[in-house]
Amino acid sequence: MARIAVIGAGMGALAASARLAVAGHRVVVYERTDTYGGALRRVERDGFRFDTGPGLLPLPAVWRDLFVKTGKEPLEDRVDLVQVDPAARHVFPDGTRVALPNASRAGVVAALDEALGDGAGQRWGDFLVRARETWDRTRRPLLEEPLWPNWQVLAEKEPYPSVPVKRLLRTRRARTLREIGAFELRDERLAALLESHALAYGLDPRTAPASTAVLPYMEHAFGMWYVRGGLRELARAVYERCLARRVEFVFGAEVTRVVEKDGRAAGVELADGTVAEVDHVVADVDPARLRTLTGHQLDGEGEVRADPAGEGKGRAVLLLALRGEREEGAAHRTVVHARDRETEMDFLVATGGEEIPSTTATVLRPDDPTLAPEGHEAAVVSAVLPAGLDWADEGTVRRCTDVLLDAAERAVPGLRERLLWHELRTPAHTAEETGARPGAVPPPAFAAAGGRLLHPANTTRLPGLYRVGGWAHPGGGLPHAGMSGALVAGLIVEGPEFRGSQ
Image (tube, rainbow, N blue to C red; front, top):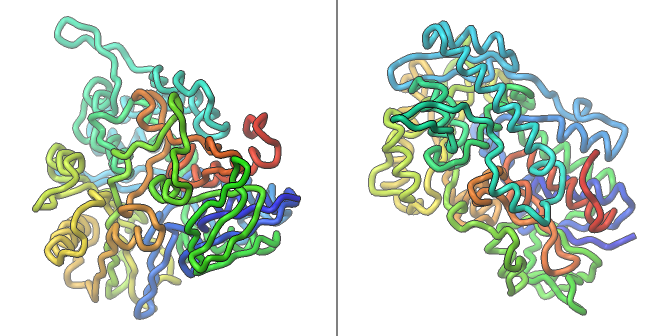
């Protein structure tokens, strides 16, 4: 039985802890805040309850697998998991609206044809077939296996099977998400639908590799799911599974140093000077903090390193307390597209400016009576913006609030008349809650693009120290966090020869 210290109680850390405990190891989790779940937080006020992190769950099979592998009680016995239908309603700048059925290719094709014109649905359906091929090619190396030592093969070859298109006497193939929209979808609204999946992680579709097409495919193939009571309930269920497997939690315990002995990680030192000696250390923290904890570079030449350019996008979340019940037929999720996509992307890439433009925003309106007092509704509006904006400035907060309220008005009838109060949660709140600097949200790992969107391996150059969570392979997102926990547990239990789930 090994002694294992886990730094942080994010979802990746919880997933690893439960699996390691079941394997017979003694696991202690040190969390600097007073609760678990990482970004899966909840705000309660005046009888209203809001998720401030992810509000929907793609690919729930990852978390089902965790519960199967760590006990006889399935996930559905611990949370009320429901499929969202439609998966999303999209509102475009020209006023066009379309509701996309959940996990139904025929339904999506028909809905797009009706809303955008004949042929639009078929082009999107054909794109999904190519996106599925991308998923099949990259699923194992990017989700189910430790990062390959020869990871360069993932960086060099674009797995998306783009269609050759004649352009200016030349044959062109899409290499970015933007080019897929221009060459293959050939409709500004379809392109906006595609690009919204990348924008949700702060990725610029003009440079994001075509392989990011797996994002809409995952949503289409596996559906979008909601947990009654909010996604915070998923964090609670995983935390309770850890407790049931005798994982120990120490809250309010900030780790200030990873202790080294004989050239390997041998413990953690806390802010009060306490040192816990262990056999392995698992860190669910962002790269900057991990470097501070160890005092040296954890990756050598030729290995994937954290990309500083990918650490600057955070999520702004506007909580809306609304008088009256949601109207009949209201969609759980509405994606409101920016009025000018180029201006939005320039702002995102330039890390901000004085004015915050119209941005692609997601409006979540769960049909869940547990979230609000009787006869009222709790809604959440979110968008990814430069995390480095001056969030302590009242003007920045006011401008961001106005932009998100404008998006919400395009999704919620009579919003201003129904609004009881609103509260903005900024990337500064994320930084305080998760320790990620400066409140950034990590994207998932993707192939191609020279490896720019890969994440560092779960192992490090310091033996005994492992990385887990959104800042390590396979990157950000709830499914990826769960898989990172499975990979780290496998590497510790089975050793370097571990090659992933079969």
